[in-house]
Length: 106
Length: 120
Image 1 (spheres, each protein chain N blue to C red):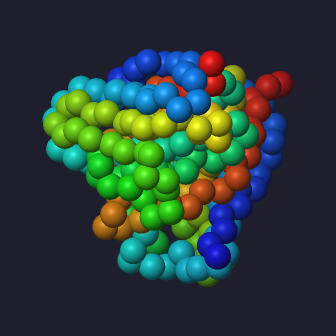
Image 2: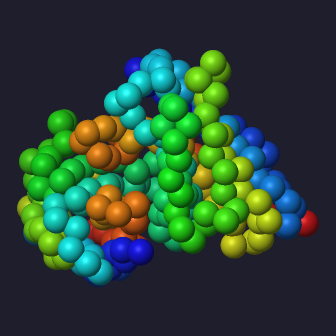
């Protein structure tokens, strides 16, 4: 099984800050990685697919990068509406989600 | 607009079988462009993929749950279903159904989720 390790598990940042989340796969998954945003009480929403492709309609302050085992998700300028938990998810072998990163406003 | 709606009992007794159905509206489940999946989330915890099914009936399951999971599809009703046997309190979670888009490979539509509690 492929394990996905996300860090940090939570963070607090100010509006306008740059926020970075990392996701590490237990083995090479090429670029078979997606990022989702989940707000409280809601279903997850896709933001980034194939590690770096922005889903249609998603603000450009969100971005992703990486390949192989190490991936990064960035919010270039944190907005109040970005308060949520973010999950990475690999699909190279079955499907596995990372543990999530809860983003809060300082 | 595509919609997915989970339905089923909100309370299941330990050792019994959890059964949920996802009804798809606004689109056909019988398309070669999608898989259909179940994902769960224990209260306050992260997401766990349970398994997925193709309209033809082809399935693949999370290895950690495989021995207890059955996912089936009913194309005539535009529904797919989840059965999880021998449940324990650890199976208490919000259960989501979702559509997996091919060949882009991501979940693009989700149901609102339904809380299933395992308790006597």
